Amino acid sequence: MKIIMVTDLKPGMRFTKPVHIDESTILVGANVPIKDSDIKRLQKWNITEVECDGDIVSAEAAESIKVNAREFDIILDNYNKMLDMKTRLVEVHEQACSAVMKTHTAIRNSRVFTTTELESSVENILKILGENRNVFLFIHAIKSDNDILTTHAVNATFYALLIGMAIKYPKNKLVDLGIGMLLINSGMAQIPNYIMHKQSDLTDREINQIKSHPLLGYKVLRELGNIKDYSAMMSLQHHEQFDGKGYPKGLKGAEISEQGRIASIADSYEALIESRSYRDKKFFYHAMKDLVSDGAKKFDPVLIRLFIAVLSVYPVGSIVQLNKKGTGIVIGSVPSKPLRPIVKLILDENGNKYSDLTIVNLIEDQSLYIVKTLDEKEAGLKMDDLI
Image (cartoon, rainbow, N blue to C red; front, side, top):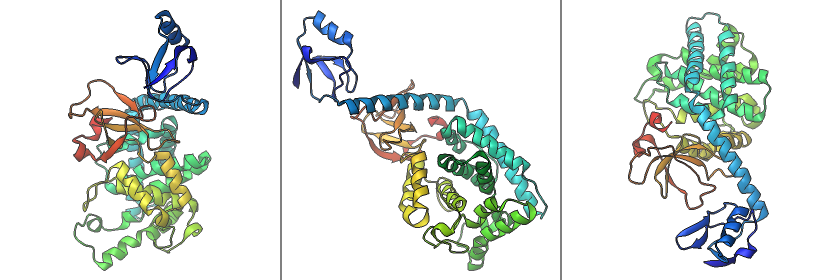
């Protein structure tokens, strides 16, 4: 421990480790500013020196801590607001699913359809994301009887719109982006159900049928729905890859429209975190890790970096095990510190549930760090328990 004279202490000073009056008494914790009242208290008690094992925090670092503290307060406030939005989200999600299912039914029956309900659905999604971008976390806890084509498209639309919002698209362009994303599976709606749910290997003919769905979707959207080319292009191009190894046309780089590149990321991420007949779902962190590992080949590097910045390395909802204090769920992170998220603790180190709301900020508490990420099965938890 280093000795610090009380006469050298100034209000606002911070240290990287706790400041001790003696072995059993802490004056202030790490990164906590010393107040004028703290100094006067020491003087009143005739204490002339204190001890600290850390270093004084620079003015720049102190300002950074203040900023991080403010962001922590904002994240916590947004999390509390998000909890109150669950019912609304379920309604918005169900409305969108209904609009997509009606459209798919019209397509299967070769009937003309309008976009009125789809537009309304996108506007409602935009509104709720505008209030709290992390509300999408609840969509994976919604128990829905809707078919997987519909649910996938609606869920992926949330991610596509988050990217569009990050790019700062104007409202009309966001609506067109959202409509296109809701309808990316229009071609799959024309593929026989037995193929989509087949658990054994597909035949070459069945694989070719699957690979025809982007073109089928584009044609039907233009012919039956009079959908704008901008939106219909997302159905055509969401399986194209940045390295030119996608389908149906093998387009490369900027040959793929920006909305097509956005659709590819949103569609791929949602597919990873969904359960499929042939595999279990991946949890958020692992899905993001897989997406990043494929990023250089499959996705626009600028857009994939933007997506990571929006969702973070540890996306909201990731279950993490800390080196101490147990297991929790990520409820937010500061963009400049993606590896040090804010965590709501769920289980203590003995596996018992925390009875009170306990939230830790890994930026402030440097003694804590993430040991590993867990899925629901490994953690022994369900999403409903987490949020």
